[in-house]
Image (cartoon, rainbow, N blue to C red; front, side, top):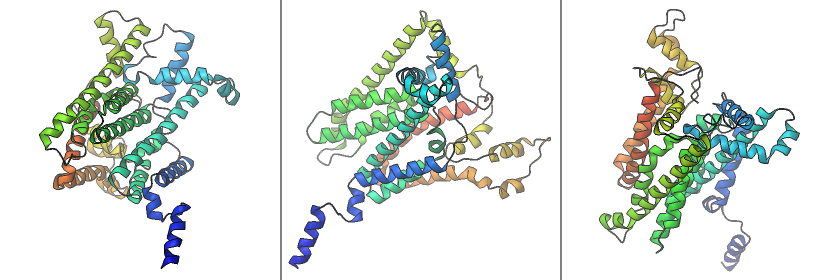
Length: 388
């Protein structure tokens, strides 16, 4: 008996913990998720780069002519081009050695490096959050599923701003969790709530529609992890300052960044500001059609390839390239309905579980505004397949 006790003591002393304990320790899950992400990057190739090339061209135009600033300070991705520009200037000696005589590729390389780093950091934040809610094995599996998500595979190495915005949003959620934990331990939590607000502002400045999740972030600060020593009303009174600090810091950061851009562009009148902000829609006018949403929403989760085009040909009865339903079924058109079934199943599980209903409220507060924005965007015609 004593020999066995000594063996277990030595095992724990030298750090040779059982696999389950190592997976729950925090370091092992991070390493596994990192390895998984590296394998995905090594074995996959993105189908598209989004608008990264347009970002690089805007940076080069601004470098040669600072008066051409409106495309540089685009409202939809306010900080992305300036960030790429600053990195290009700072790393120019290194980039020029690797890509001599190719300034556009140098700018794209800088943006892609930020995008890759942001994807990894987002995976780390996600794993850390999952370890707060479930065991290490489950956290690794869920983080691995996220890594295999179509937008992550495609936008991670692209040089577009979306993964950096998502990384900042994940940092915001992590800050909220830390603020609530600090509050539960007797602290104020205000430092973490301000960090969360600034992170949410940064996410919005890399992709402006992220500003729509501010109410969800404030709600999460109030309902995350019920305090067993307080009733709901008492907890809300205690948490409202956290939500207020988060919202205030986010609004201040977005306002300061916008004023900086306005000064850089030399805007002086409300009409000039409205014209600049409206230019981020790239002269797209709404159309009365929800058809793009039928394939656009599933595309956010899965790579549909050319099947989305075939689906539209069936619905619109294209006379020049006729496609029938039988062919679509053979090609696996059912993939279009997988994300919808997943969302419906998730909603049902959240609804029937009392412990998950608070999280369901937060998800609804974040998803509904985004879905409304997605519907509105789907009713706008695409231009050459890009949405800059």
